[in-house]
Length: 138
Image 1 (spheres, rainbow, N blue to C red):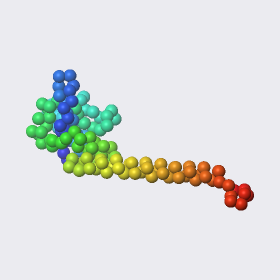
Image 2: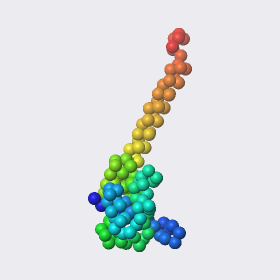
Image 3: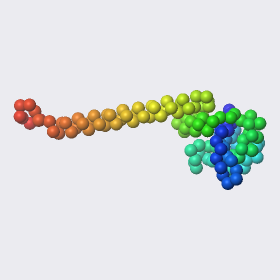
Image 4: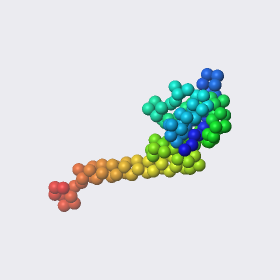
């Protein structure tokens, strides 16, 4: 089980913030308690795209000292997407590759569905307008 902090630098008032996420909520909350981040700052999966805390860079440094793994914000986003699909964050090293593959699979499925729908629609249109070569009823 691991806690991760990304390299995002978003301003919130006078603070600069990043994300802290973890394999489990228990581990995430334990790290938040350890570095002094109040539970009220938890971004629950019900309210956001995934369970995490937005933390100040000073708290990020404390998290890294306490064993959090540093990742990029792109890895964090890809890991969060993977968790929404599979239920697991997975490893940061292959997160972006997983997301690219997942998006390609979704696009292929959409294309196949569109082609199947289009083909069925074309067949229906052709059936309704076709005339037999001998001039009889279709």
